Image (tube, rainbow, N blue to C red; front, side):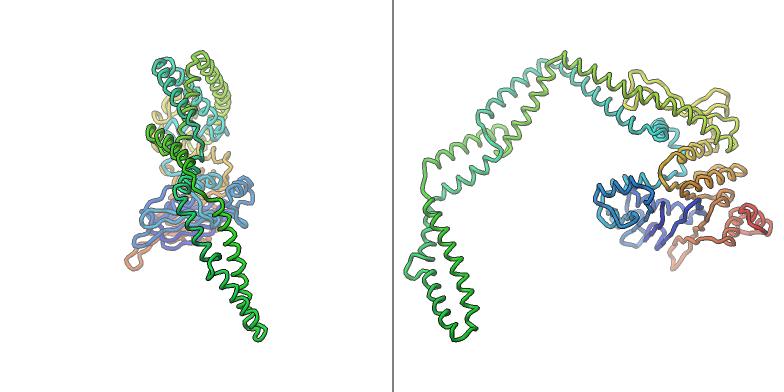
Amino acid sequence: MLQHLTIRDFVIVDRLELSFLAGFGAFTGETGAGKSILIDALALALGERADAGVVRSGCEKAEVAATFDIVAQPQVRDWLVANDLEGDDGLLLRRVVDAGGRSRAYINGSPATVQQLREVGEWLVDIHGQHAHQSLLRSEAQRTLLDSHAGLSGQSREVAAAWKIWRDAEQMLRAASEGADALQREREQLQWQIGELDALAFGDDEWATLDVEHRRLGHAASLIEGAQYALAILSDDEAACERQIDGVATRLGNLAEYDPALAEVAALIGSVQAELSDAVSTLRRYADRADLDPTRLAQVERRMDAVMSHSRKYRVQPAELPGLLAGWRQRLAELDESADLAALETKVAAARKDYRAHAEKLSAGRKKAATEMGQAVSEIMRQLALSSGRFEVALVPVADGAVYGLEQIEFRIGGLAGNEAKPMAKVASGGELSRISLAIQVLTSRSASVPTLIFDEVDVGIGGGVAEIVGRLLRELGSERQVLCVTHLPQVAARANWQWQVSKATRDGITLSAIQPLDDVGRVQEIARMLGGVEISAITLQHARELLRLPA
């Protein structure tokens, strides 16, 4: 459940801190006051696209933070743990957008991606926009809605994956059949190239090893001379450092018997003696091993020349030759597979059979869900003064299937303009579409698992007694989960468990939005305003009390 929402410098909102209640809550106010802006701000925290336009004019950045109670949502807690984003108790989503349009996202205080906001947001909030009836006219949206409502989204993804495997197999068979000669030439060329690099026998890390050895052998004389010079200075000459430091250590050790203050210095000199002795020993071992080996140097140079010749030939860096060889081998394996047309045909047949099995299972689920959904939406339509209307979900067969299955989904309405059921867009008016869309949304929201439902002016085009029924339906939903509704209809707002008034005012020449929670007296005044306009009469106030079921 949504608990808190904090908004800073978002569109016409300067600073808002809101604490939400359970049940059905209504946001009301004059047109343009900023009611839908609150929904837009929450959507931003849930991962919606951001741009510089959301930053309030004259400000450096906009910020939105939303806190959710996830005690009853173990899947959200598991997701947070899996992504190393768990918090102490609840869930905090935060989004910051700067004036340049760049955005940053945070989950429980840790940096996150916008995609992660969207993923977790799908479990938290379901937003129904005021233009939902327009999207419901699209076949893709209808199919997605049916599958989601029936819990078939996973099966739909499996069908899409099986379709791709089938089509890829068909494409491979077609390419093998149509371009056999070209594929054979490519195969022969790959075999020759692979044989050439196999003969080179060049290992993954060999170039780095060769480079180090070549530099060492090429500078062997300088390395030996440098080691001998260092040994002379440090140890071998009469005035070498080692002898002088030994003398200093002996002298200070004797003097420390007279003044303990020199003991610390003598101890430090002793450490220098030990480290210098180690360095001299290491240098002697190095000098003993180092030698001039022109034969080995020539071998290394010949090897490097051979590798460089192949790298120039194939236009890659020497170290990339092993990877190139691996890619050739993989491509050759694919070509060998494609050369066997019988095996490819078998593979295509198996992939098609697998697709059909998944698609037929999905079709069975859709058929059952379509019948149930048609009856349930029709029942809600009757409550919304569309008693003559009948909602149907048609499954239109698709020849040979498609990525989405064996049928296209089509929402149809019967009884409004003739008894025959026809596509929604062809038989329903704007107002009827709004009510049908609302009926579908109410039904799908009942089956949704998200704890917070938001309806943003979905009651456009509805009035009178139908509006009161809409309010009752939303209140019923509010008894099961948190429901937030932006509305202009007093009949809807009056059925809310709680109500906030959104207003805007001008301060210092700047228009800002504000929100005021309403008590019973405030709700009467606001409902009366929604009923009667600017001048509110005693009759309007009485009507408002009746809608709110408050005593006069």
